[in-house]
Image (tube, rainbow, N blue to C red; front, side):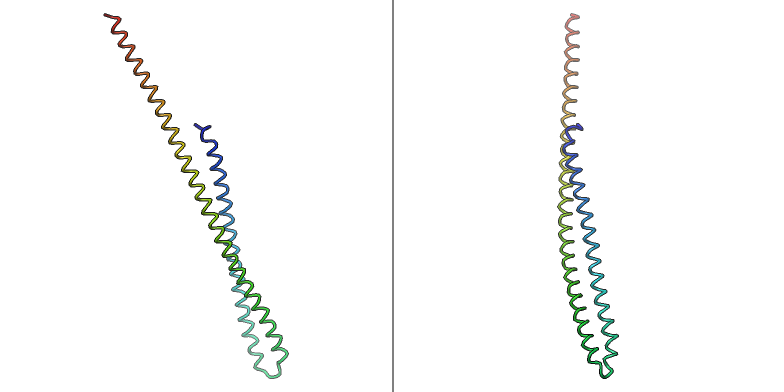
Length: 154
């Protein structure tokens, strides 16, 4: 029975390994997404703090050069935030793909497990049928032996 299941066991082992790799990849993508979101939130918070800090200095007269520097920096900071938001969107897509791959691998493992269950049931059924035939043959021989013994007495 074990020899009949060896190819399926190997297939199941391979499918489970691929599923585990897909799960690890999904977890990695989840962490990357969380990291990208955190970084985007930090950039937004930094810009907000920066704008508040410098807003007070602009109330003073004669700060034109400082105002130009401020606007230049805020522009670059806004570009960094927009870039980070694109990174977040990309990380979300990668996570979605990783989830799809994981679902496919889990389905494959479940299919192979179902196939193994069917094969085991088939092997058990064939074994039970062989055993029943052996018992029937043994009972038939015993009946013939009793009949033969009974006819030889007369």
